[in-house]
Amino acid sequence: MPDRAHTTTAATTRLRRVAKALASAGAALVLLVTGTAAAHAQPSARAGGTLKCSLRTAPGGPITFSPPVSNTPKRISAHGAVDLDDCTSPDGRQARIRSGRLVLSGSGLATCSGATGVQGTGTVTWYSGANRTGRVIGRTTVRPTSGGGQGYTPVDSFLSGEAASGLMAGHPFAGTAVPTNDVKRCFTAGLDHIEGRGTLNVA
Image 1 (cartoon, one colour):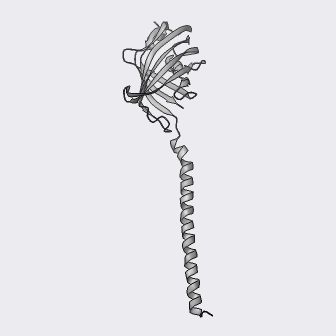
Image 2 (cartoon, rainbow, N blue to C red; image 1 turned 180 degrees about the vertical axis):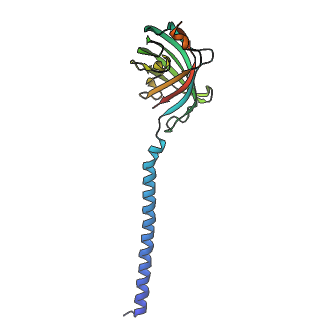
Image 3 (cartoon, helix red, strand yellow; image 1 turned 90 degrees about the vertical axis):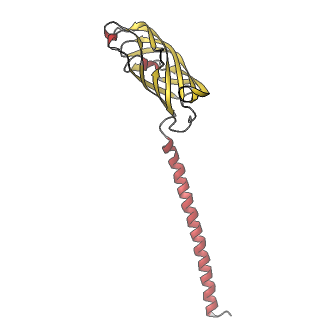
């Protein structure tokens, strides 16, 4: 029979092996829990929308209204182009996009502060570089919300709606533009165009 010292040594060796195995299992458990927590935290860290851009009416190409908008509701047509810059993608899905240009055409029952019954379409061309340089990433056809809305000017009603086809199809978008030309004359002499800058967000 083995003596007591041999038995004690064997038992100590087994205990050390068990402790080592438990330590390894514990480390693995810590890694698993940490990894799981990080995985669950990732979506919230990436939340905040698909794309955000600053916007401004294209140089030399303001949004025009025909007939001029006044404080009396009337059916008008709107045409123009908007440059999109400094684009970022909070959720990382459209990280390649840096800039774009939206060309829009539509009509609506408009006053100086908004429009309803909005109809029309717009096309956005997206670029990989700043100021519409680099590769064309894709195009999006946008459709304004028919109900329109209230904003700084009738332009805001044409800048909100849904991406109907192309890149980010099905995503809602919302834009606002603060006028940079004198729009006070809308209430007196009418307004035939708007220049402005603001933001465009794609959810």
